[in-house]
Image 1 (cartoon, rainbow over the protein chains, first blue to last red):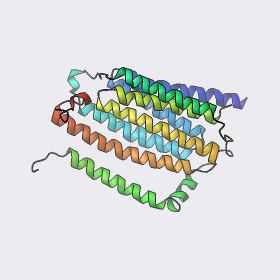
Image 2: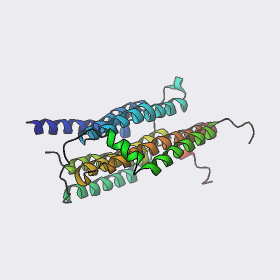
Image 3: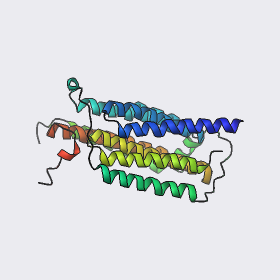
Image 4: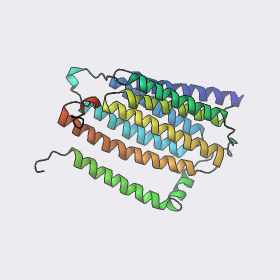
Length: 168
Length: 101
């Protein structure tokens, strides 16, 4: 009985995620795309919860929804004249794009369904925050520091790129 | 019964939708949204394999680093888009073709 409920929950979340991703790609309006990207990010966070990755789900909501989506909305607002209300986006390369995307999907789906995966789920989901912290301070200390330097470089680089140049 | 293949199928659908968005949209912000979809699908794969196959949380650590890189990437990409808009007064990628001429 509980398994059936989990299955239904998975299919609802998968439908929301893929459907809103389709709206992101196919919608003509930039604002609709940005707001349905919100549902995609929340759906992916739900999938993380079902996979037992609670820290990652919280990170997804904080960084993607709270940071990246807001940045994308800034990008929409700053690069269009708002009074025109003409926030349409045009398309090109429809046929090659569709062919390549369908080919990628078919090949990935065949690999995913036909391979005999070693798919025994791990033990019951435990809180992972403490383990993630331990990994950051032990095995993954060097990537952790490099990530902080990467963020600093991105911060300075983005500020450099958009400043108004009085002297060149 | 939900198996690993179900998660891989959702991830494959997100990935191909992201590729479609990157290839067919003219607006640079929309292309950026497609790239975010691709990164999210890769993250789903990492977490699903770490749950079903390796039974460790190494995949989750990789996913966290992917999120960090995505945050840095979207900041720099928006700076580039704003600079493009200041120079060309548009963000349509097919009009940024001065290297072709």
